[in-house]
Image (cartoon, rainbow, N blue to C red; front, side):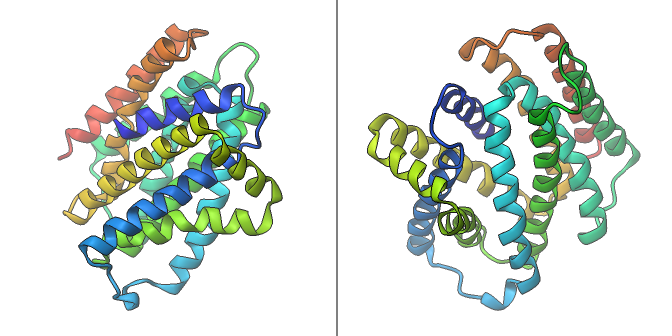
Amino acid sequence: MSAVAATILQRYVQKDSKLHPLGYIVLPCAIATVLLLVLALIRGYDTRWELLPKFNLLLLAVVWPIANLLYVSAMRRVEASQFSVIFTTRVLWVIIASAIFLNERLPLAAVVGALFLFASSVLALWEEGISYRHIGILYVLLNAMLAGLGVTNDGVILSRGYDVISYFVIGFAVTPLVFWIISPNARSSSFSIIRDRKLFLQATTLAILYAISAVTLFYAFQKGRELSILSSLNQIQTILIVLGAAILLKERRYLTRRLIAAIISFIGVLLVINTQ
């Protein structure tokens, strides 16, 4: 539910904004870092640095900033309902990467379920005036690929038993640190949001939603659930985003087609659930 609310809110704040889109991911990530740091310090920050592989931390610093840049760029150009359906292709990348790096083996039903998720995204692409050359669609597809690899990389790190909240203090800090250093647009848009009470409240809400989504997913992973299956189950949000966007954002263009795509995606989720 946190991911559903975050996607709809991100599209809402980006829809007609004149600020650079980086501000809408950099500042929420920075706020999430502070909130998680406070929580981690209260619980006892995990200082077992030897559990954090240097190569995977380097991947974290490369993959997630690029994925987040693609995410906010896509949300400015693509409706939330279409984004959510196409983003289900992330599951395919998580399944492939988890099989390679986490040695996860999936039953046939889970693979078929993932193919249903992929089919739903293809259906969402078949809309009037939309093609693979559409820059917003390209951003979503690339974001899905990098997010899938990023989630798997997080799983590789956390499979060693490092504390989830302590890890995501680092995980969320990477994006703002990178872009505040290299991008004047990220700095100026972040300060503009801070000066506007309404925008700052929206950024704080996004931060809380992103933190809840990430932490709960990987707590479940550390409890013994396979990351590929958890990522598939996480896509149950798709049909909720399509409905929520239609009601709250008035995104009703191609609504029937997107609902059908979301239902196909839901069937895929049920197939994955059936493997448990």
